[in-house]
Image (cartoon, rainbow, N blue to C red; front, side, top):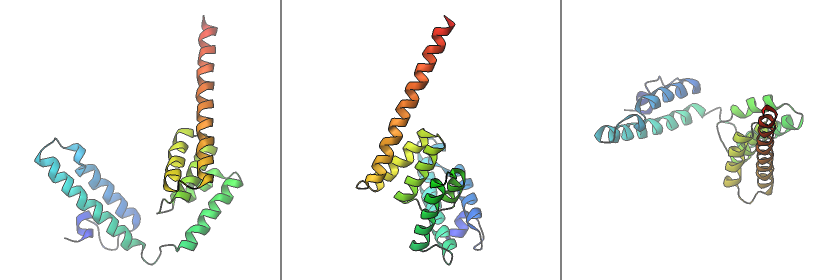
Length: 169
């Protein structure tokens, strides 16, 4: 059985069709949906085959239009320029079109989320970037800044709750 047959899609399937088929199969065969025992073991094997087929089909779909390393670097620079210009939603949309999630991608996505005031998620992406490239001071500084913003935000929320409670009494 080839990868396309495992995902039950034609060999001419687009990336979106491949992803949709994968999501459907993953929802159906994820091992957590099965009780411990032989069914879960079989689901584990099935899910491993689905994962392998998904990666192979995506690799096949990318051939011919996969951006070069220079093209990806240029796109990341465009994202940084959008962030610098305050166009955070545009930067986020452009980042969502990337197939790879390198350290710079995670850093930029975290930076966008931070600018959009989604500090909890920003912390996750900035942590991943720092983990992927532990020697990069730019990533470490951004993570530290996000952590400080998060602490300040939580303290402000706590303080405003106490003030509101005090006003009610």
